[in-house]
Amino acid sequence: MRTPLARILASALALPASMASAADFYVAHGGDDANPGSMDRPWKSLAAVSGHAFAPGDTVHFARGTSYSGCIEVTASGTTENPVVFTSYGQGPAPRFNNPRFADHCGRMIEITGSHIVVENLFLYDTPTPPPDKPPVEHRQSAQHKNVPEMGAVFIAKEANHVVVQNCEFSNCPVGIRVRGQHSIVRQNWLHDAAKITEQWGAIAIVVVGPHNEIAYNRIENYGFYGGNYGIDGAAVELDGEDRGNYDPHDTHIHHNLSRNTKGGFLEITGRTRNVTVEFNVSDDVDKFVGVVGVQNLRIANNTIIRTRNPDLAPRTFWTFNKRNDDEITIANNIFYLGRGQVVYRSGNHPQGFHDTVRRNNLYFSPDGDIAAMIGEPLTADEIMGDPGFVDLAEGDYTLKPGGPASRFKMGAHPPGVPIWRAGITPRIRP
Image (tube, rainbow, N blue to C red; front, side, top):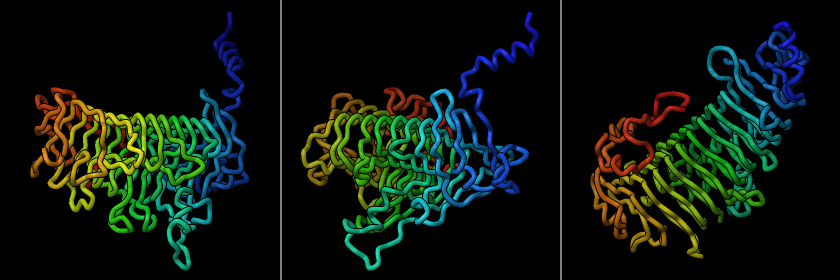
């Protein structure tokens, strides 16, 4: 009969090599980069992290209550079963990361070129913007303009696949997360308070450039700005066609996100693509819910879309600048709660709105305007007008009261009785 110790040793020997070699590394104030990176002899700086060849299953722990400046270069790769993880440990506030110099990796704080990576439980703040051209030039020739697609506090390169960014907070990061790779997930992050990049660009919380990516359960607040060449600009999520040579964001899934007070709206798709699903999101923003320049098989379903913030300089729920008129869009099971003067679909006063869409089972309401005029098109047979019955819109509780029309027909982002937010960093929702 084997002893317990013998059984443990036998199990350890049976582990895959990647698991057997997995190690934990620690970074803390008072450490030394000459140390081995163990808990009792931690590293001190990001240079030690960037310079180490991590193996699948390794985990890098940053001490809570510490702060770091510069860019982590993540070149190692994990595996599906054993990713390389960057996280926090100990007590106190999350470790803080900042890179104040745009000349240093375009201000990136975590630059990922490896695959099967997890980044979690970190605080990133104050991303720099590209320096202006001297003398100023038209934006198509502007180095400043062309540098914007290189931005991202967390930057996932084209060759980096299967990356997870979760449970992180981003403050004043004009581009929070850029995803050029494939099969990555951005989930349960809080991104807030970022305004202007250039006169052409408002801040964007999450940018998707590559295919087969998922954006889910994030909270985005106070992104974008009034001003600049468009009067208002920014987005909670953008599929960035300006990121030329890398742009191919087909099969993107954007779901269960909450966006509040984003100037520039919820989603921009600024290059032609296909197979984009936008569902179960709450958007209490300014400007569009979705704007496109050409997309096929775009599904917009079960979203709660609120447009009552003033001033709304571009009061349009949807727009397309697709001159080919070959958009393929389905709009179903959504709640539209609109302030006075909003326009939804293509109409005489909104010639750039969505057209030739498949619409079904949507609810429309305005507390102070002519909702029929705002829609601009006849209702379909199963669409209705009526008050959705939010529990407390003023306080940001978008849950539906039982028995209302939206709850009966299963419209909107959240069924009655289900809290609006379970995954956020903090329970407080900012105005």
